[in-house]
Image (cartoon, rainbow, N blue to C red):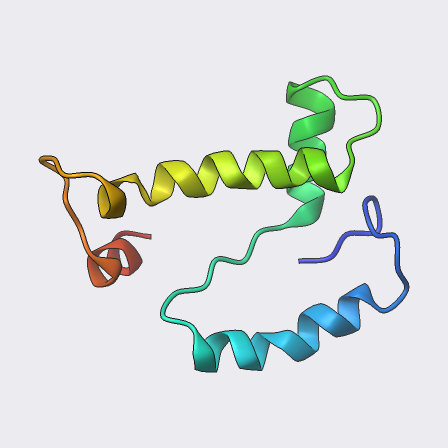
Length: 88
């Protein structure tokens, strides 16, 4: 989700809005992540003075890696996309 704190382009809200239909229609699962919340986490918790998209992407990659661990590795908590969606 676009944020005025992080945005570097004027049309970012339009891009996000117009892409939602394609994401819903053509993907099995979609996670919407708030850029402003990520910015606040980087600024307040990680103490980064001016978070960049690279910093936000690093945070998202760590979160998505943790969320999809049960899909990638065998173990007691094995799940599939349906179970993941139900529990989210």
